[in-house]
Amino acid sequence: MTGPNNTAQCSNISEFTLSGIPGLEDYNFWFGFLITIMYIVAVLGNSTVLYIIKVEPELHEPMYIFLFLLSVVELLIATTVMPQMLGIFWFRQRQITYNLCLTQLFFIHFLSALDSGILVAMAVDRYVAICHPLRYSSILTNQNITKISLVIIVRGAAGMIPFPLLIRRHSLFRRKALTHSYCLHQEVMNLACADIKVNIIYGLFIILYVMGIDSVFISISYLLIIKTVVCLVADASMKAISTCVAHICAVLVYYIPLIGLSVVHRYPSDSVPNLHILFGNIYLLLPPLINPLIYGIKTKQIRTRLSKLLTKFIGQSKSS
Image (cartoon, rainbow, N blue to C red; front, side, top):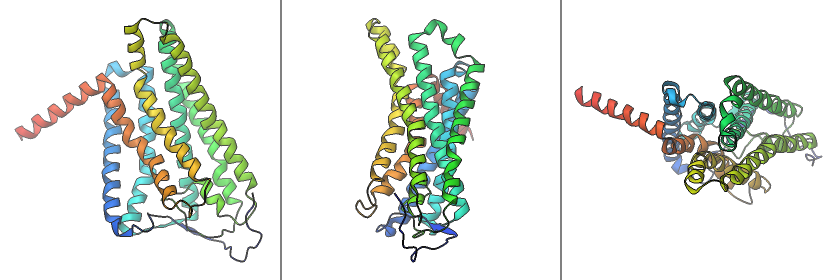
């Protein structure tokens, strides 16, 4: 695939124009209000999970260490996109400089890769806990957890650094208007007035290298878990499955919007009005919002500690 041969309509741009929701500009205030509520809930939810894991000794286990890392990444993702979206909806600040766009592009893809890698680590944790419970503490030591975390970070950084570098090879673009409220590699590259075959091939490689391999590892982990669970007695199998429910929900919350976004990007934006924007926003906004609720509901220690915190806060409010 190449850009158009005729470069008469191409120009060297210094900024891109981000999109709100075309045709619904009259509702920008309410969209901004909704984004604000979502951002507050995401920050409070993930911060609460981080605090409870830190202060609760019972939660200083591999599963919750990975959850701690997941919450950190979700906070960073929310902070990378939500404040800028508020600028679009409330203050009509739709311009983003070329360099800032590439920086945001890198961090969005990098944090998304970290998200995926942590979900794999959590799947492996569940596999070891259910299939090799006697070796759990000897396999998932603090040293091994640190190594796993470093591998996830290095893989994400190494895989995503080429994205902005590949975009920088192109100096001319057909237009500067983007269809999302933030910058993505697959959209920016399609605006280039040049051969983008390298971008496409590398983008496909990253999808297979990160999301493809990760989804395979998660699937294999759960196939082995199912194989083990069916051999257990009813009570033990139900208990084992219950420890996986929150993680399965987190995986679905991550992968379903990702698949939807990948599918809609195969069609021109004018053929499916606002669908690109809808899936793009769901892909980044839903996990930071939903994951703390999922783990808060499914984790007894988090529920108990949160209940104590709320009771203490209410008591202090009444006494003052």
